Image (tube, rainbow, N blue to C red; front, side, top):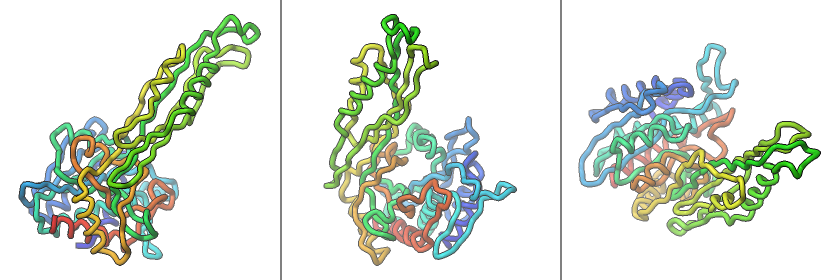
Length: 363
C-alpha cells in the first residue's frame, strides 16, 4: 500500500463544496483494504457533506484513534482546471494541490497505517466532515458518543522545532470571535448635545479591550499564550449624522482553561457583547501519551522531534474538551495550509505513515 499514491487519489477529488464524494472514496478504500468495521454517520447531512467515516479494528481496554478530516477550503483559481478538476503537480520532492497539506496527505498516511497495523489496542480511524467550518463533523461524532481514550489528530506538526522535523504538538490555541455592539441616539452632527455618539461608546470599549491582559497557561512544561485584538469596526450612516450604532469585531486566541474577561465592556452604557464563534483550545493531559507519540516520531526520522505548541485551532480542541487525551502529529508545515501553492513533502507523508503504524503497534 502506498500512502503517496493514495494522497494523489484523495487530492484529485474536489471537496470544498461537498466532501461526500471523497468520503465515499475513503470508506470504499477501507472496505477494500481492511477487514475493519467501516461505517458512516449523518454529520452535515443538511449540507450534503456525506457524513463522517469511521473504521475500527483490534481489541483491548484502551482505544487509540487516528483522526483527520476530508473537507478543504475553496481552492485558488490556479489550483483548478477550466473543467473544475483539481490541479496536482509533483516536483522537488513535494506534491502540490489543494488539500495536500491540509490534510489529505496525512489522511492517506493514517489510512495506510490503519490498514497495515497490528494494533496492541482497539484502533479507530476517523475522518470528519466540516472541520474548516467550525468542526461540524467532530461535534456530531461527539454527540453520537465518539469518545476514544486517546487520539492522534493528524493536523500539521512538521517544521516547528526545526525544518523538515515532524514534531508532536501537546497543545494548541482556540479561537473566540465576538462582536461588541455600541448603541447611541442619532442626531444632526451640528447638535451633538441632542444625541449619544455610538462611536464614542465603541471607542471606550476598544480601550477596555486594549487594556486586557492576554490569557496564558502552561501545558506539559510549555507556555501557551493567547491574544485579544479588535480587528474590524463599522458604524455611522452619513457624514452629518451622529451615529446610533457601531460594531466591533474581536478576535481572541484562547488557551486551555483561560478566557479574557471581555464581558467587562458591558459595564459601558449602551454596549453589549456577543460571542459568534468559540473554537476550543487543546491541551494534552497525559504525558505518557505525549511521550509515546514522540518516541514513535523519533524512531521514524533522523531528526530529533520535540513537543511543541501549535497556534491554530483544530478538531483536537473538540475532542479534548469532551475528555479525550489528544496530541497532534502530521505532515503540514507552518504557512502551507490554505495557500495558493499548498504542498506536502513526499518524504514526510511516508514518515507519518511510519509514525502512526509504529504507535498503533506498540501503544
